[in-house]
Amino acid sequence: MKSNYTLFTPGPVDVPAEVLSATAGPLFYHRDVAFGDLLGDLTDNLKKLISARSCDIFYFTSSGTGGMEAACCNLLSRNDRPIVAISGKFGERWLELCSTYGIEPDVVRAEYGRSITPDQIEQALRRGPGSTVILTTLTETSTGALNDIRKFGEISVKYGAYLVVDGVAGVGADACPQDDWHVDVLIGASQKALMTPPGIAFVSLSKRALLRVNDSDLPKYYFNIKTYEKYRKKNQTPFTPAITIINGLKKGLDIILEHGVEANLDKHREIAAYVRNRACGMGFELMPESPSNALTVLKMPPGKDSTVIIKEVKEKYGILFANGQGDLKGTIIRIGHMGNYTIEKLARALDALQAVVGQGGQ
Figure 1 (cartoon, helix red, strand yellow):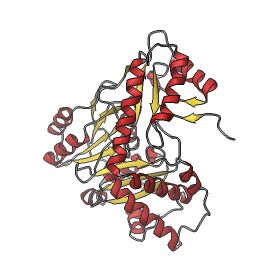
Figure 2 (cartoon, one colour):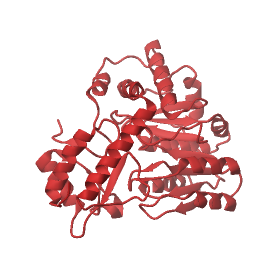
Figure 3 (tube, one colour):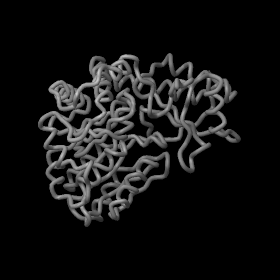
Figure 4 (spheres, helix red, strand yellow):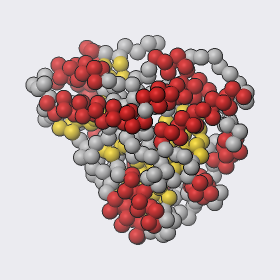
């Protein structure tokens, strides 16, 4: 069934025709040399995008949450007390994962819309044991807030901690050079700024993080990185992967790298600034204090319900924005602009929003 709307959600996102074509190519055997070549080329591209020169990358057929779970069950052990930094629903997901494995973390919180401060991370490290694990988020998709991962990395080095970053929404839209910012584990997924349909998560590990994997005593099977490491060396995966999505992901990265890593980040900054200027001109207030370039989150004016507005924009104009999650449902609109978006596309989407909301402005 064909959808009758264009996605302006913060994942999945609108996918370029070239990437969709790549996912529709002939299927080949995942033990064939052709797949090994494909995975090797994909890894080379991804290392360039995230500046992971000294890291090893593992692929899982899952959503980004699968990558987060893989990080948890491979880096942590039963007696660990990690730091969980929560500034939105996806920070809460780190807490839920720890709870699933019977681990009680030290929780650091920020009000939704605010970012975790580096001082909060440092204070938690002072309270806790040495060589702990910090579980945090680059781009908090539920609120649009961006965390200062570079500062977190500097602090983690100071205390000998392991920095684990959920970069699912941010990678490709917000800077997060893994080696340079001392990120031990960076998690991403295909369906956000990498411009590919859902189906693949990746976990990029520093050498020291890979060594820590050997000490983990938590149960795991499908997400056991020690198993994946044996196959990674042969450019394979231990279980049948989403081959066509991997093919599309390689194409998506080709497009980004052809444009240039810095130019791609500049494009996201320019688009984000355009959307926010238009939205503020329409009378909206931005939710996050330090916004990500992957999405814009707007607070609803008094008397307006985002559920009603999103539905009307979709039905009248074929444009789909995202609602808030949990307690934020009905109070915010989330506009995704990571990956395959231009100012021209977003102008049409914002024109539709303005027509429905009936606000004045540009």
